[in-house]
Image (cartoon, rainbow, N blue to C red; front, side):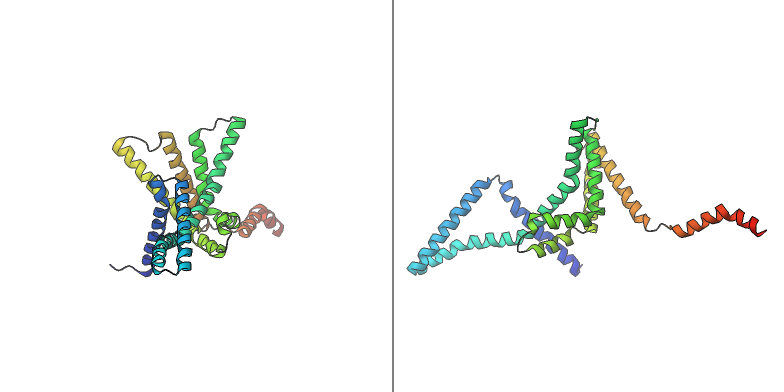
Length: 256
């Protein structure tokens, strides 16, 4: 079966994004400390600069070839960074979006509970935060996206227009809606399997119920919004009918 052009493009994008995430996460996977990476990179750059300078001044072909070999890893690192840069931008903007939609409600509820002690339980906070996050991320995504494009530091450089266009295309309302459905589908599938097969919750019984209820509320809200377009509501016609019902008998009496 041959893939169409859109499918090929999607596959290429997935490969690039996953490859970029893998390259970014390699130091974390191997538990390499960031300061070691920085020290090694700076030392390597210093050696390369000294070697290149000496090779050019002495005009030695052997030293020039060695310098070229030293430049190969730097070229590979530069290529990886160039390929991974768009993914890093999308990832950082996703974190920004997560903080706006989920982080702020959680912090607000924690502060309210700390000050007023109204008895909000942790599952309740998770339910309210996830419900608000999923609904706001989809149905006020236009305004959230404008805020991110304006204040996100990763879009404030020489590639700002391209990063903004990339973020706008990637975090489109329909894409976010699909992503939320996919996340709920995966989570609920794993939760159901653990409950049926092992008789254990994924997090805890209360938190699993809170997440399930947040999905049900989000699903009901999404269906309500989609069905709202089919609502036949004509205010002027309804007002005229009200007037006919209210004043109809009086008009008939006046005519008689």
